[in-house]
Amino acid sequence: MRLLLEDRMYDRVVALARRPLGIKDPRLEERLVDFDRLDATDLAADHVFCALGTTMKHAGSREAFRKVDYDYVRLLAEGSRAGGARVFALVSAVGANPKSGNFYLRVKGEAEQAVTSAGFDAVHIMRPGVLLGQRNEHRTGEAIGIRVFKALNWALIGPLHKYRPIRAVDVACAMIGAAADTARGVRIYQFDEMWHLSRGGQ
Image 1 (cartoon, rainbow, N blue to C red):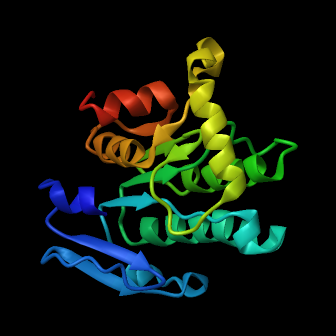
Image 2: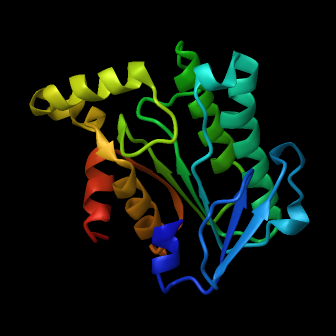
């Protein structure tokens, strides 16, 4: 959100949130919404940036997890497309596949499918591995995983390079850079592509 507000490509930034963001900017329009009842008439935009997601621990069940990571993403994609959006940028996950035997990766893959079939001129799918950055909640297992991945970062080469940890801010920069591209179609960004874009590459 802060990066979008710093980018002069956008005259107005509309944020859909469940609770106040605590960010003040004359170009920011904050809308508190119930994601179960997204209204397509309120979703007019040119570019959409979606980082919706939860954890199994926080969701409490597979059904609740799927509601956030698939249903809400699909509703946002369909509603914003109906509102005239041309570009959709989505934070997914490395290994996302609608046919995966892993529930998490399968849901992420299904969310990607929902977005790509919504009819946008361009869809940019970010597939980060472990995300580095400050969080509002402590996740012990994830914290351990981050330390392990950092320690083994040197070994993640070749086909494993896409699993390297990446800062959340770099993913955000990559999303904005991708949205500025005028190319049409669906593009998927792994670690290298996100890293390149976050450094100002095209």
